[in-house]
Image (cartoon, rainbow, N blue to C red; front, side, top):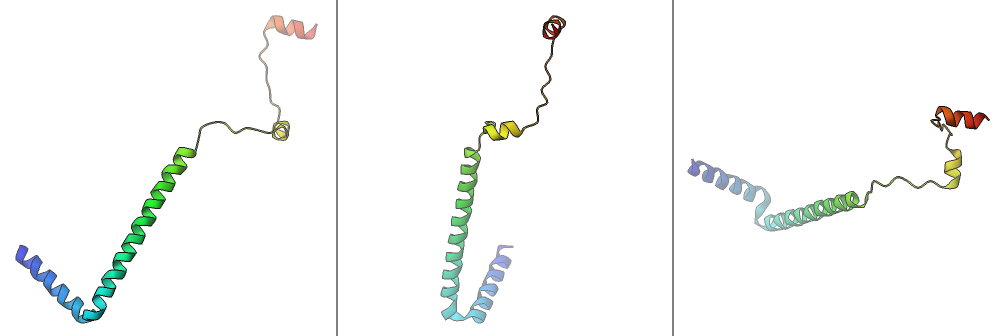
Length: 90
């Protein structure tokens, strides 16, 4: 089974050599290496940015300004017991 794989790899290498030629093959390999390095660097930067963004988000509620608070609708319902209700209406 290994002989078949080795034979396939040799045939593919020969076809690539014939198609690209001996002069263009090192340049192609060099540009492929540069492209892979750039891809790895971008992936690393994306991961770092995602972890940084995740650590910077907090669960604190937003702070409202006076104008934003006054613009909020006032739906305040107070629970009043019987004695307090009598005190309010007196």
